[in-house]
Length: 371
Image 1 (cartoon, one colour):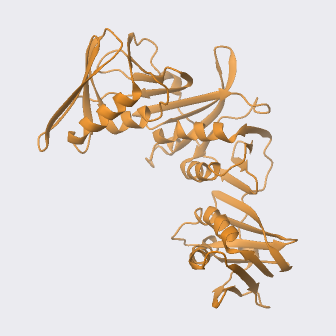
Image 2 (tube, one colour):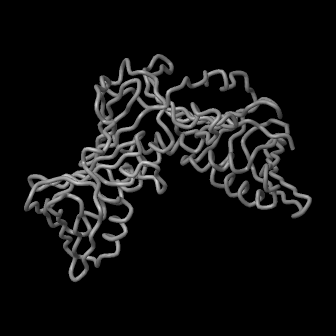
Image 3 (tube, rainbow, N blue to C red):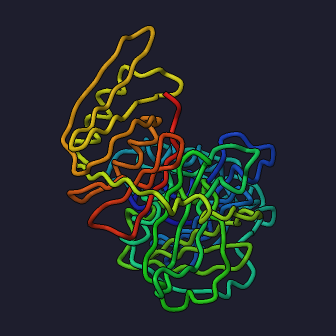
C-alpha cells in the first residue's frame, strides 16, 4: 500500500472515525483503524463491536492495499502536521509497519493484520427510508437530554424510534426518558418507514450521529432491522447494534387530566430559572414555582447559600405551588424556540406537560419534586 493525501482531508476523516475507538481496549485490534486504499479512494473504518463507522476520502493511490494502524496515535500525528502539508503513507513488504511522512517528519507505526479486524455491518436491513438532515438533528436534539445513564435500566439508555399515529396521521416518533422526565418528538412518517420495528438506538450511537449530522448533506439514508441500524451520509456510513430490550409504555406517563394551563415567554422563563437556581441546593437543584393568577414566582433556598426569588407575568388563572429540578426544567425550556411556552399542570404531586405553543411536534413531561 502506498498513497499520498491532503492533511486536511485525512484529519477530517480521522476526526470522525477515531471517536468511536475506546481509549482503553482489552482487544488490541479494536484500538486500530482499518485502512483500505484502492482506485483513488482511501477508506477508513473503526469499531467497538457495537458501533462501526466507515468513511471514504479521495487520495492519490500509487499501490493498492490494506492495513490497520493505531487510531488515536495516527490521529494525533496527522493533527500535529503543519497545515497544507501532503501526507505520504506506505506499508512495508511484510505488512507489519506503516510509514507516515509529511515534510521532514517521519513516523513508523506497528500494524496488526487486516484479517483480525471484526465486521459488524453485514446482514440485511429490510426497512429503508431517507429523512432531511435538519429533521434528524431536531429529532436528536429534542429528545437526547432525557436519555438515562443508569446501567440497571439499560433499555432507557437510548432513543426509542418507532412508527405511531397521532390524530389519524402516521408519524415517526422518537421518545427518551430517564424516569424523571420524558421527551417526545414526531415527524410525518417517511416513505418506506411503514411497518418498521420499534427500536432503541444506544446513547453512544446517538452522540456520534449528532456530530456527523452537523456536516451532512440535505438528506440522510436510514436502513434498519430489529437488531441493527445504518445511517448513510455522503461518504460516511455509521452502523450500530440496537439495544436488546423492551421500551416501557411511555403513553401511561403522559398525563391526560391536567386542567391548569399557564403560558409564559420561554426566554424570560428560562432566564429566571437559571438565575434563581444559582442558590438552589447542589444535589436536588430544586426550585419552587408558585402560581397566583397572572403572576408566577420562582424561588429557591439553601441552608448554606441563602434564598432567591423572581417574579414574572404569565397568561393563566391558576393558583398552586410545585417544585422541579432546575436542570431538568432548563433542559426542556432551552429546546423551546417559539414565542410561547405552555405548562399544563394538575397538582404539586403530578407530572407536568410542557410544550412549545408554535410547535406541536415536541412534547415534554416532567415529574415534580417536593419542596
